[in-house]
Image (spheres, rainbow, N blue to C red):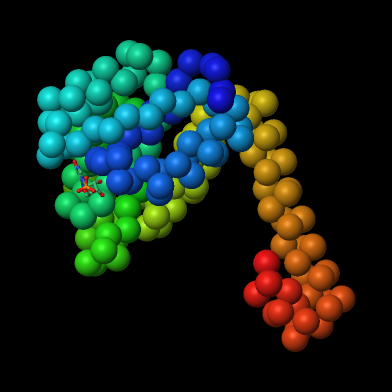
Length: 177
Ligand SMILES: Nc1c(C(=O)O)ncn1[C@@H]1O[C@H](COP(=O)(O)O)[C@@H](O)[C@H]1O
């Protein structure tokens, strides 16, 4: 686990969001960035949420990732209480498949932005947080460029395999994976 002091705060409305949000934690770990995780709910623990959001920048955090499902007010409320950038992760829900979460998070009023990623895409939230930090950190910027290069290479390798194996065999190969 990365030992440096946390600069990315990863919060969520419930521990049931953890299986989604763990992907943001994994990104922080792979870029060796200090992170902290907390269960904070605008609805169930409003005082804790206010305290968390108001003190986040004083405690050294630089970016907050907030995930919530359903009536997902947490990211917007936190954004209203902190000067830090907030990235919202709409967590998928059983009845409305996360559309409720998405709409709750994305439609912020002018003046209080929340950078919203796709439903369930905590990995992109982690990457965006790293990129925000990288904008004034040359070492991190290089790591992002290396990561992009790996992504590109992965796609090129797949294309090469497709060419080698042919469509039918390649389809079977990815089904077997
Ligand atoms: N949307 C919020 C908030 C909030 O926005 O403050 N607090 C909890 N929740 C969400 O309720 C869902 C169900 O929670 P439980 O699984 O604990 O019943 C979770 O996805 C959580 O993010």
